[in-house]
Image (cartoon, rainbow, N blue to C red; front, top):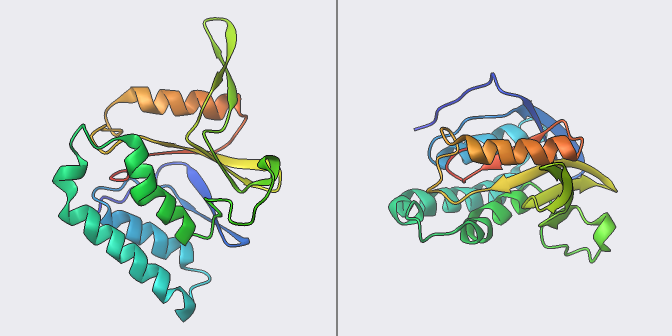
Length: 181
């Protein structure tokens, strides 16, 4: 079941070297990621992307068939990042694992990036799960929560991400638990 809401903020994702802007979606069940992926590909889709769509369909099927297991509190944030989020952004063309061997300041994706956040009147280093950049400019932060965290009703994850985005002077930041975006 897909819940589709185009009233949220614009989100910018990079497909290879082309930027495609599409509306951020509220997604129920991971099949929604498949729809987002298709929309990102929309302007540039060719048959060379069929393999990527098949891979994404496999991840969606895996997530849907084992959804109850993934929703258990014991399935943690790192596992959802490794099992689903990293592969999703790899399929979008991001160099999530720094396969290009770039130095830290030039990597497309930085895991556990650092942002200075003011907390109780003091500046503290905080760690968004990912920062995505083009060259040296950060495009957006991505914060991931485990699937058992209901990001649609719990305001704490959204507040956390807003602090990161505000402190990083970013127009867009993305929050996901892989079930919802």
